[in-house]
Amino acid sequence: MGIKGLTKLLADNAPKAMKEQKFESYFGRKIAIDASMSIYQFLIVVGRIGTEMLTNEAGEVTSHLQGMFTRTIRLLEAGIKPLYVFDGQPPDLKKQELAKRYSRRADATADLAQAVEAGNKEDIEKFSKRTVKVTKQHNEDCKRLLKLMGVPVVEAPSEAEAECAALCKSGKACTSASVLGCFEFPICAWHSVGPFCFLCPKGLNLSFCLRLVVVGSILLEKSK
Image (cartoon, rainbow, N blue to C red; front, top):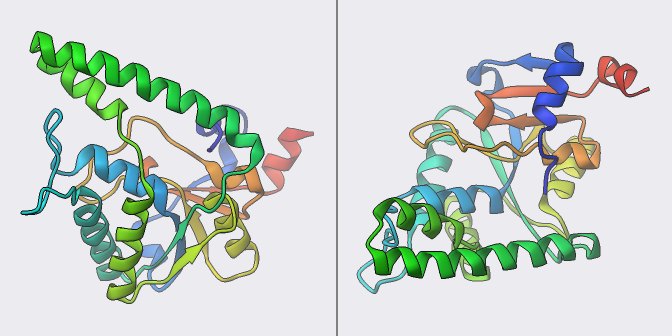
């Protein structure tokens, strides 16, 4: 889920806890990536115009596959070893948030219908994005693609971000990434620093210009 505004909070209160790293510095390293966050971004960005999405000849949506394939290739070409982590059963604490998301999508669907009827292209673009949801089929499609590419896939027992933190803590990954907005894909308008909810030693948010946020002694001092 992430912590809204955490990046700004760190910048304002513990600026020395944030460190800029060049993309090349991650050459040869394993990065655990929250897959659902990336898939959501692909469904909104890749090949989307209003209510129309990128599809195959059968009319099946392929935005998530195109985005996942292209981004993974870019990471591999840069010498980075991605490890995609998929969400498992959501925790009870998240039920209220999921209910809110469902309500917001329902409202957006109603607003979208009105925008389509009125022919308002700006509202159609805005509300169509708010109706996007990552489905089980989207996840399964991406898992199959990644396995065919030889890229590791991990199915978390619950939250993917928690699993990313656990992989970093155990040394199976160098760092974790919650949102990737690099390469040819536009940077998201929002930033999630979810791994810090689970005390990940290192959390990488590539949508924030590959900024590496290291939780160290300085941050701990600020929290006292």
